[in-house]
Image (cartoon, rainbow, N blue to C red):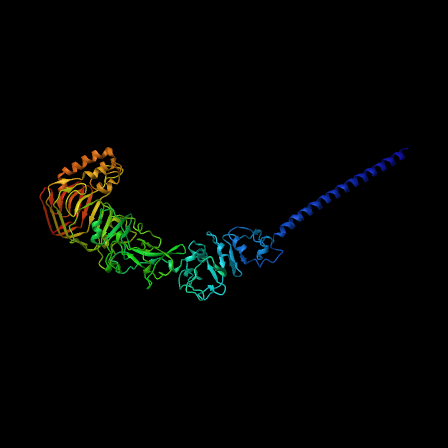
Length: 599
């Protein structure tokens, strides 16, 4: 019985062992099957990734040595789009349908900064011309282009495009009138050479959209400054100590000086009119302004500048003074007169002496002949043509005359006090001669106070503190020869219509006359409520005995004023009133003298 039980137990154990073994085999098989399925899925993903790689195909036809090769207009239009380059893009009909190309796990794209090369000439639609993106920073590999490269094929009426300048001309609204020039294939020479004519035609070619256009395989996106647009420099020879001929403004440190070289300028001080430098003619071509030239290749001068009115000074002709005497543009003077360009005028950069075709003539100096401006007188000036009108002055006036070798100013940046930057080269004093002042009628205190070369020298009040000077008024290093000042009037007046007409801009008329307190209280404008006050002030000025103060140099000196190294020779002063002086008639406030001479 016991043996029988043992056999049964052994059989059961063996059965369970078999069952367990079978179960384990099933688990293993399931696991293996699951593993095989996972491996299969991973292989598909890997295979999909592999299809986008450039490892399995030859991509040299479309991308090689970091250069994308261009064959058609669809590729051109893709430049800058950042779309991915595919293996069939060289075939326009299959553009974008091939394998996406990647190198080192990075896709190659038609980006703005990529390198490109045109593999053949590509026809363009003149009515819908391809445009290179304005923010393109990439490059185009290309072969050599010279003046012998084909620019126009008359047999097919085809104009070849070699650079972005040409593309922009075609795209412009005025392309119908823009001539094709014989050197247009060279980007630095666009607009130069001779007009191109078609066979059997007396009319030159233009970049009309009706022509056939081909983008040359030697196209470049580079746009170097064209030779026609290179800014011309004005001569620096015999410029009388200035940086260049025609210069009328000089900035030294934090001060800008107006350069005075003639009687006309001197008489305009206090007028508030604009200071003009030299003016030249320009023309508009392909949406850009260029300095125009005459048949001899010289820039066309329309004005010599306020300081250089004589032909001996500007090298061209005698000019009248100021804006009304600036010549208008005249295409007849231009060597391009036969072309349908637009002409204009431009100014000269007063820092560099360069003719800038984009510089507005009214903004070239940014200065006006105001009473509080800074001036350097650099030539002798004869005032014998007519009587002198005394100046109301609140600025700086320095005499500095070059000896032919030196400059008017010291450009050494080590100079700390730039107000003395002219000291080292101040040399000879410019001479203001034949000054004749005659006051026979009532003196209008709305225009001046005092009688002399300067009516009144006075400082401006500080904007932040009424008790302080805005800055010292300076007159320095001037010589006066033959001054005759004659004041025969005992009466003063002011024009009542001046008050009734005041609305704003009071400073232009009365800024040099009114007390700083009054000026600041009016905030630069006068409304009807203040007119009575101003009338009272002007009445007080009218009754002020110093209004008739008379001196050869100045009638009145009031406030923070410094006068140095000034010389008077052969002077005469007469005054029927009190407050008379050979040099100054009346002084009030802080006034400094240094090196004053009177013969």
